[in-house]
Length: 285
Image 1 (tube, one colour):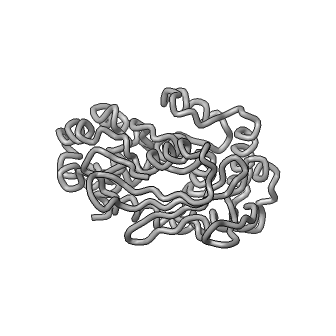
Image 2 (cartoon, helix red, strand yellow):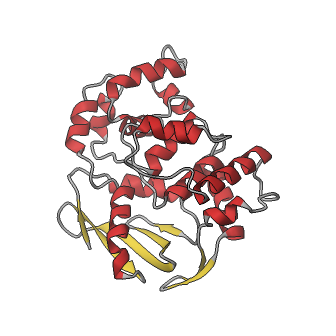
């Protein structure tokens, strides 16, 4: 299938982002494509995303999925690669702002890296609290290996799928390097999703979503906003307490305070999540 988008689109940057976080056996990222094992409606399938040979589009190849699931798969992939963004409007707005003008000029195709599944992103966000990207990836792989269901795939053979909320809500997560506090949070999140007390409805206002998630023990503003940005593609999500963001707009060599950054970000609405990606990227230049 051909998935069109408004140019520019920095597909290579998204591949780099996903590659650093890819779960071995579930995701595979190379220089040209992204491949993922997934399950929908009890069926296991795979999809691959790569640039189209011509035009402003990505090619999506799906194996092993029932035809009834195609619209859902397409919607998820479009969200993952942020194909519906009005990038011209976003760049015009952020490109006038002091701390973002150079970033937008340098990377006009910056998109939000979305997620295949909201629950997966929530679990990965908790595992990533106060640890490096590499450490979070290792912990995620351990969770998948120990609690994920084994399944046969069309081209990859036997793999482990990401665990379900029901499984993780009662899982013994000790002994794989996760702290006791994180274990408690993971179980709370899994049970809340399992019971329908929290959800991943993208139409929820950002403030409502943040209130809903931060009401759970162990979930703070950073995690809630990160989940909103990656799991639900909220364009205005903004984890103001993030130390990298605070350093990116440092004053006199000192990171700005969280409150000051929150106030500064008001001029970036309603596209603060794109500002996040630009500022994170600027620190790696």
